[in-house]
Length: 242
Length: 249
Image 1 (cartoon, chains in turn yellow, orange):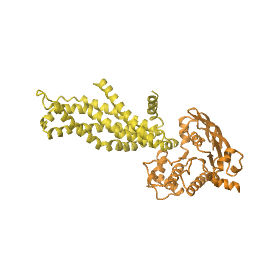
Image 2 (cartoon, rainbow over the protein chains, first blue to last red):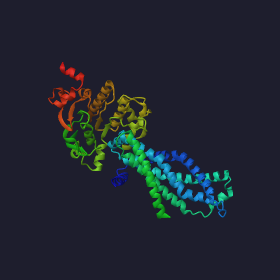
Image 3 (cartoon, rainbow over the protein chains, first blue to last red):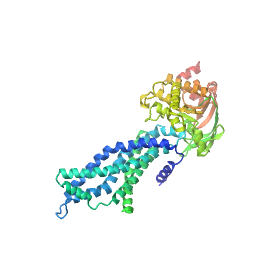
Image 4 (cartoon, rainbow over the protein chains, first blue to last red):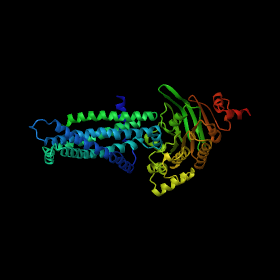
């Protein structure tokens, strides 16, 4: 409970004694590149294979002759949009970006770089963490949209190359009974996950004490806690919004 | 001028500083000395606000920093420059960006003026043609000098140095000490240096405060430190063979 209280006080401290807007703009752009653009490759790889595997496994489980093959496309679409793209990519994002945020801030803490900012009269939490959270909120939903497209495309490639479904059936399947609300739902989840990953990882890194060993521990703890928070938030949002 | 009054601090029930008072004058290099673990760095951190003391106050030109509101604290902090033990240079920025950092954040100077000021400060600490080097590409002594340049770039009125010559060879250490003293006199700033190096004490100690187990047990200057009749201080000064040999003569 003490840690949760400290976490909320930490979040509150991001919004007091801030620097000028101009200062943040450059930092946010830098963080967008670091957190978002640099994650495109891993997101692309994971989501393409995720879609491909979903298509192949769905086909394997469709044993009833009463179920049409185009259902594979529909299932790939619904699983990808509602769950796999926002949630599985969030776990990947937590592993890549969360550990990077935590270890970066942890190293700055133990090498007194954060103290140096404080001595200059700069709110170090706001200066270092707020741009990361804003950048994650901007970039993660875009990564999820990319993951949705690539995952569905991965399903198409795997399905058509292995002859488990025709092009026409797959495209018919992904267009069948499409509910646009699922996209809105995925975007809400993306924003929640982006906030949780960036803020929890920053919190863990910012309060690191000790040396290199503790930076590693903080980084591991950041990823673990982020993953737990993602899964809890996923369940809560599904209950609340569906 | 900086005054500290009755500073006390404990961590988890362990008393680290007990009722420490003193005055650090402008234009002088003021030293806080003592063995490792006596609370020197904690006292320095209390003075710059990185640690909140349990009792007592720190005054910057009569302004109570310890109990100041956020705005006054920020105002005073922007008059402070600090050289950290490891330099605390920002790893992701090169030398020029490190030194320019306080100007970018705290001033509205034009890009040209900022660059001129950075080059002036780097030249002042004896560093030229290293602007584009990363902290990982320069030596320990150069890092300290970049740290000093960053500390003075915003025309700081107060300079704090935490063990400025730790990990340096004797010649570089003396060069850093002398640089700190020259800058202190040249810009008429108030400088506080934490050290346990007796060479520094003898070289630049215009005012010396000796701490032992979290208490101030002696104050004076390098001129009269060897005559001090305090056993703990005598043990500290003459801990090494060279100093004992000089004492015997």
